[in-house]
Length: 236
Length: 113
Image 1 (tube, helix red, strand yellow):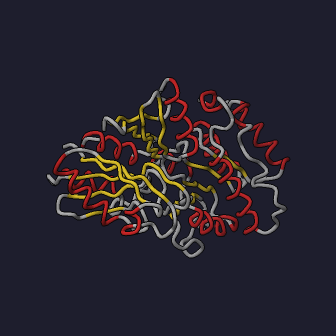
Image 2 (cartoon, chains in turn yellow, brown):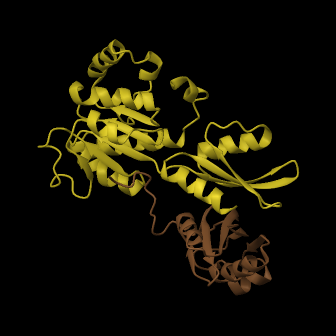
Image 3 (cartoon, each protein chain N blue to C red):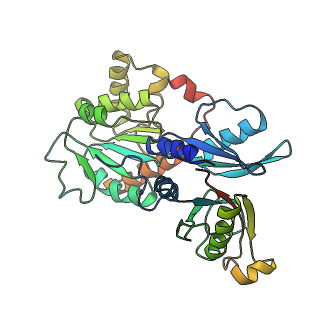
């Protein structure tokens, strides 16, 4: 590796773009492969697997040894709604390795007293997302079940290809939500990516238990990225 | 605004290596390229070393870093990358072994300026 390659690699990492540094272990040279670049043959298969699993690995291709060092952005969560479930979800997500931020324009909910040590935005999601756009390594959970607050970020999350999109609310509530999203032009196949009712079905009853169900669903979604073959390209 | 990449710039070995280079230092990068059994750091982990023997990051739980640093200093002189192997099964391991019982392969290269 040389200094300019290192600089490029660090720039990709800072910009939250997934990349792999491919090192030829015999020759010593290196190059950067970005997610979506086409790499032919056995090396290409190994590259795809690295992007999916996030595990770096050595591979032999036609008698040559390569090391694939994969750099995935840190997965993170954006929660819409400074509600009771979010209070439990915030510390759990942080411990599990999914740093979380909360947006809620209702300043009575989004207070530091209710959310110590959490990055809070007491603003409309529209304004926050303008400053810090969503990406495919961000998961979004909409927990207010207020259309005025939830609908915009949900649609933005589908457009950005967020690895997880979940929305609180009963099947009936979600049915109405689907109608609203269709009415503003969200593609039906994208809407099916919304997990609603939210959370894995573990019989969660309390807000904290629902937070566990949501976090488990987030982890499942992150660890099975790319398993739904071909979906990524279509979403755009 | 927050650091949205969630990179700890003060401890991240690759960020530190870039800074060292910009300060005109010679830098070697050691990378775990293979692990067997129970290994403390996963493949892809880095230790970065400057010509004075300062190092940041890790390739094990502190068991073999000393040996990697001295190999890296040699690589800085010769410019030749090398592949190191550490485990419990060989002679070296007795001196700088992995107490966890695993084996690791570490690639050491000079960061060309």
